[in-house]
Length: 82
Image (cartoon, rainbow, N blue to C red; front, side):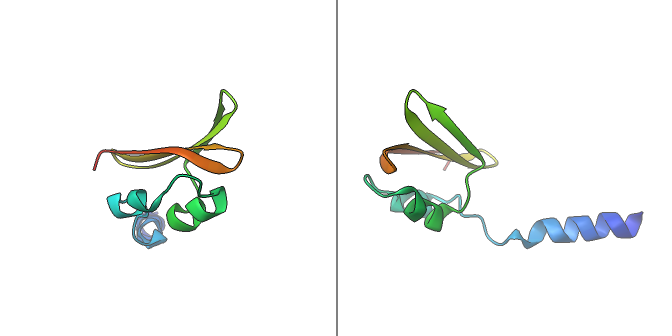
């Protein structure tokens, strides 16, 4: 059992450095498409439709990057916790 726990803890640290950074948030610009944003931030933690817009959220700890898309283009992005 201890070996299993050690392996799980080791593997959880292998995801590489976080992409939820202020530097990456600053790279997100209006009119970028979803693929361009995902190339910078990776897959979002949350995807939802809000009043005809797609909203994606990347979160790590208290750091959050929220991007809203309309017609596959960024219309707004916001970073908090940095």
